[in-house]
Image (cartoon, rainbow, N blue to C red; front, side):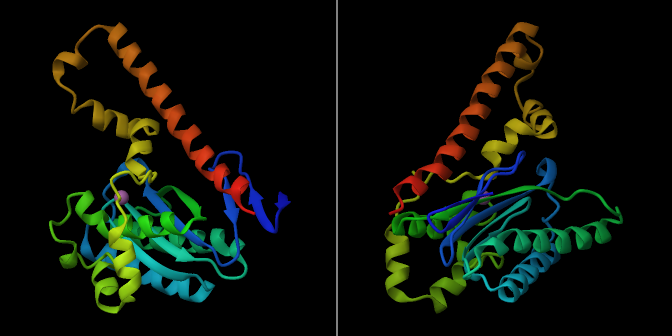
Length: 244
Ligand code: NI
């Protein structure tokens, strides 16, 4: 562990880097293993949301926005004084929901969650854009046309309870170019199950073509995957260097 400029920076051998900045805004994305739709039932999304509200409250994280989708979630929250509780928060959120999901499916001890990604939002504009992004996520993933009708996203709450100035600032932020590490962009490349799922959607002519094409495609995906990982690392490192 390395302490630097009052923030704590931790690197895990098999996880994305984590930064702990007191009182900073963080965006979280968590994904179900192999892209499975384990959260598609309403009662599951409800249970996840309930757990999220309860745990953030208990551990002292200020929840700002959330969206719970069929196989992943996003939320934005403000860190307490001790931001290292981030891991505890996610660990509890994942273990409580995994146990309940496994109970419903009657598959004890199955791994439910694949991983999570957090990023510390150092700039106001990146915070606003990510809030906007999370609020619109159910539409992005095609779950609803009008996000106000989606009960597992904070959009309605934000419209009704949110501060008017903040609301205007958030919706003024373009999100088309927000470089959010939405989980599918990565999972597609890293999970063999997703690859099979994705691969099976390719036209048969491609799937039945020469092994050389398969090899080339595989090579291409590896490059893309490496690019994403590299991009994510840079994204994490850059703001730190600019913090004064
Ligand atoms: Ni999403």
